[in-house]
Amino acid sequence: MARDRGTSETYTRPVRRLVVAGLMTVLVLLFLLWRIDSPRAERFRANLVDQVIPSFEWALIPMTKAARLVEGFQSYARLAEQNRELRRELQQMKAWREAALQLEQENAKLLDLNNVRLDPALTYVTGVVLADSGSPFRQSVLLNVGARDGIQDGWATTDGLGLVGRISGVGQTTSRVLLLTDPGSRIPVTILPSGQKAILTGDTTVAPLLEFIDNPEQVRPGDRVVSSGDGGVFPAGLLVGQAVLGTDTRLRLRLAADYERLEFLRVLRSRPVERLNDPGSLVGPLLPEPLTAEAPAEEATDG
Image 1 (cartoon, one colour):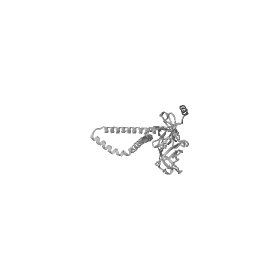
Image 2 (cartoon, rainbow, N blue to C red; image 1 turned 180 degrees about the vertical axis):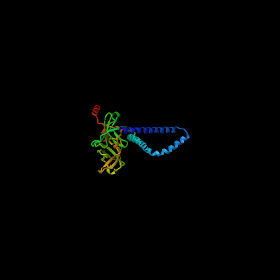
Image 3 (cartoon, helix red, strand yellow; image 1 turned 120 degrees about the horizontal axis):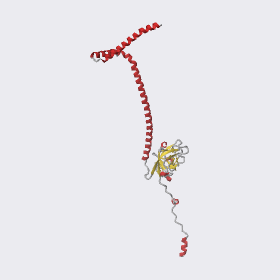
Image 4 (cartoon, rainbow, N blue to C red; image 1 turned 60 degrees about the vertical axis):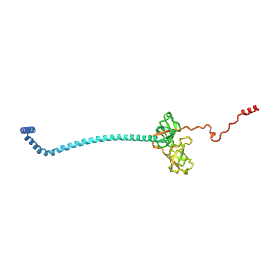
């Protein structure tokens, strides 16, 4: 066994040396061939490349495929990052869109308030709705204006479209508005063009009742309803809504105010109601003053 191993090593070493020497010689020749600067060497190199390179295309296919696969993964990673960035920008755009819509709605409300034509003698204070207590038993909203702004009980409030209600509670910085839909709301109105008088009564629905109409036969659905000003409750001529026929065959009112979007309200400074110091003068003529007890005494003295 030792002799066979020695024999194999004896033959293997010279062969290995010859292979290494030949490989080194080929490499040196190739180096010299590519370094020689002469026309003949250049033509030889060109012919060698034309003959050898096309035959190695099959060997380059795996490298080409692998390079393309790496490029595809890199492109996919870039697309995934761009997709995440676009999603973040889309979320930001949605938030900006919601903010823009809210600003647009608020701007439209304020423009509506500015475009409302009122009696020039009426001044107003604009407030922002802070809270809504729309319970089945009470319909009211809270404004951010109060006694410090000169608000008083009973003043009318409107939005950009029509009458909303009246002030029914004033604090230092806030005030409560009793809506026309509240069961405790009763206001006198005039139905146009017939001029019929009626009482608008809240019943917690979006279409309050028209009651105590002088002549209901002269009222038609679609007639315009405004505040009458009777009793000094509200200024006359404020738009309230349109008369409609309810499902219960009773006359109701479709409110002009948008109760679903009460954001800004205008509080009208109503003129104070004139107080009557002598109500008896309204029902009869003035009577002469009664004679005092001093007059007969003076006549007796003269006699």
